[in-house]
Length: 189
Image (cartoon, rainbow, N blue to C red; front, top):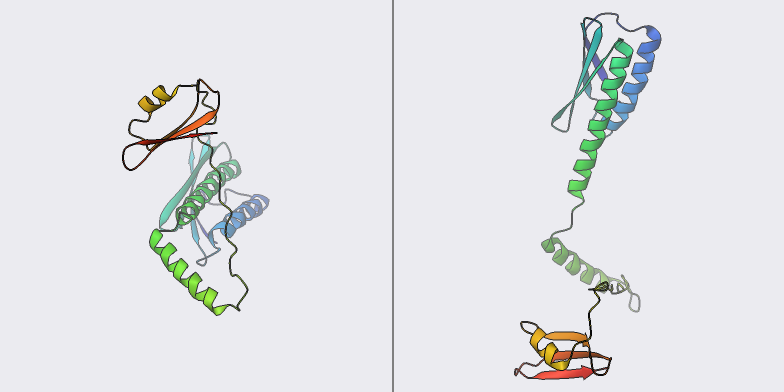
């Protein structure tokens, strides 16, 4: 990482400079991983007893800026570097999450056709992919319903094709299904 300083000349001791370079090295690992070396521009300014540090880095078409203020230059740079590191990690996570979305249906169709052609290419008697196990989804498992009669079930089936209920007379689970001809089938357990 190329670091360019602007502002207060000789504000850091050689020991502090080495420590800051180690911190910049950590940020450089995050930034320089893919597209070569990055440039960091550090602006140091002093306002009365307060030192202000502004570090600017260009990364993936974004200007990331870390600003820190403290009584000494080393502490101000440490704060600015921490803020810059948080911004880099947040941007990397956002980019990573945007690329991990669900695949489009068009891509799924091409994958199925490719899988079909690969099955034809494999030796007979071997399967390329074992079938996935079906998932079970619970629906209304917390809802406690009181038992109802057949007449009440006929009233509740409005707009639905079926209704599962506990019969008030027998105490058993029953299912009322609407047939295509408009009549109903009653299935009792």
